[in-house]
Length: 213
Ligand SMILES: [Zn+2]
Ligand SMILES: [Zn+2]
Image (tube, rainbow, N blue to C red; front, side, top):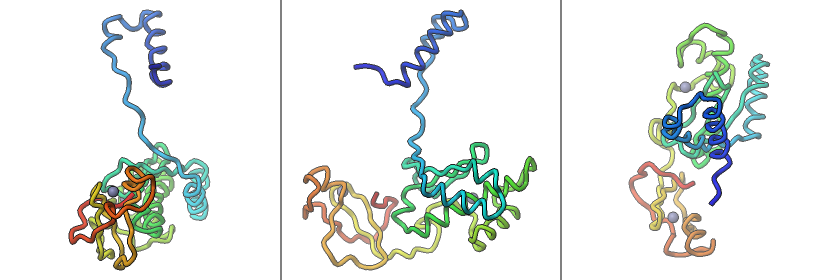
């Protein structure tokens, strides 16, 4: 098996250091390859929305630099913002909740970047006056200062929960599901993508913490 390109690059770097005597042999062996970078996926469409929003509130430089990604490894955090890298990272579970939730979380996180861009080098509180002002400018004046997914912290609007008997994935719906629907992941995995009764979602009382992907 041939090593991954990342590994190759790393080894090359190590060998080079050894050749120019910056790294003793034994220490070189002890150096572990870095963990694979995160599984962030850029979203060009949301990025375009972000640029437009940020430009509209007067942050032109930030509008050029901002990037928006999804991180499938996020659990209950709805989103995060990093001013240093001008990055907003969102939890893909938001898509399952609603398109509105995606938009609101995007604005919440952008408000962090806008507030910091306006403050310059001055340190500001994460959810302080500047952030609230930015939220209002971005169209979410009533935004709460939480980053958790709404089914954990905000009032639940989803009343019906269904679970796949195969993989136990939970799906939330506002209205009762009347048609027969099965878990797409399990049907793909075990039944060639076709409907199978074995993976039909069953209604449950407790939502748990997983939502259909
Ligand atoms: Zn926040
Ligand atoms: Zn399933």
